[in-house]
Length: 341
Length: 283
Image 1 (tube, chains in turn orange, purple):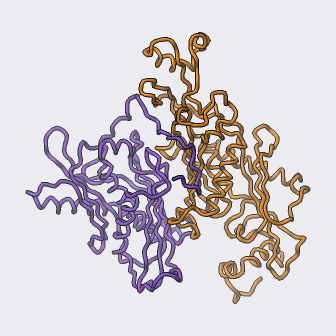
Image 2 (cartoon, chains in turn cyan, brown):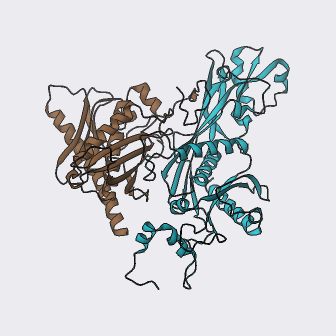
Image 3 (cartoon, one colour):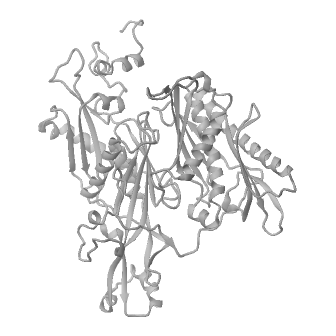
């Protein structure tokens, strides 16, 4: 046991964070090794999810992982195809990217941590996170372009009948419509995805992505139709339509702690710390984020990004333990979201 | 000019959904004229900040558009940057921002005039409470994020009742900031709390009546409103904002209006005391 006269835990952590974490992970006596936050290296903070807590957004979610709290609100707005300069009717593949229909933004400057104060431009971290969410939204093909299309058929019939026909379109088989009218896309929904950090304690990407996924799951867009006279999109409050999402990708982040910067540095030893908090993130150079989707039964990897350091090798990334860990992590997140839905 | 540091979306104009079916039923006031809406206040929501609080003004069932949700963080007191001139007392900075999803029409990320106005009012309200002399050469940042604003903003713009809602928002900002400042352990003379009272015209006859904690959409017309930041144990007001048309023939009406607003603030002050007690005893 350490003598009582020594530094208190909090002071030790503040003065020399590196040796502090190392002493916790590699204790000299027979205390079980743990991280300084009390978790084991592969233990994550259990996420809790709350859906539909905002009344003005079309979909919203609050995700809390330990002391990291994120609110995500999804709001749909419409854009007429005549306002999209690059619009081509034949384009049915790259609509989302080409017309910029998904607009995620992350705001850290809510005083969520002392280093993020409002008043200035978004920090580099906020810009990087927004871009990562943006590219993952597109590369995962989570949102189906068909959900965002607003159709209109320019029929030969009088305009009076048109409204009724548009509303019935979902139920009726519109074979006869095809014969005398041309159905075309007149507008798109644009999804503004705003992610606000209320409290920041490490691992922002996992939390932000989980909030995005949960909020998109919760999103219900109103029924929309085109008013030819006013050239406007008119919506109705009845029967809002949920988005159909493809799969449920989950981001899993871990950092590598090597014990560098301490006097007992040993290059070959390292610890993989899952779901890092702010202290751990500040002490580790190497990090890995894997986006995985196990909804099909087996683990499918959508993206891997690894920065800094050379400790993680392919062998570890394909090891049984690692795959089991990301699968459990995926389960943890999807169960938290599903329990609310 | 597009903001290159954020993701801006399509270049063309996007429109919020326009509904053609019946608007949501107009809420009616079901509480007593001297009743305030219940609030939920919790401190310590952001552990990495020196002080923080979360306030929820309850939306009643059936009227989902009358609630408010705010979070506030306090950072400091900490030393001022080297470039700052010497200050014998604490420098207070306040920042109020609506989240883009807080109101019916989407808000931008840059602060607009009404948000700056709210920040200034909040600063005045808090400045009178803090014992700034005890913290020379240091700064405190108070950041309020409005997660959900009062009612549907579009509705408010149509009715011209937007300014009235700002008073409710300000009162909530004052309350949540006071709780966060207390949570940060910054010396104060008292806990300040916000309260709003309004002079509304009664439907039917031309009479008017004073109500506490008004929700603009619940009344036909608001003639005047008053928002105070009040210190209950010292019986002082640090910020007073009164506007509207009060007939000049009755000067006591001003005093009554302020007295009612003070009365409303006493209600919210109990919530602050309750949540701080809970934080102290729970720890």
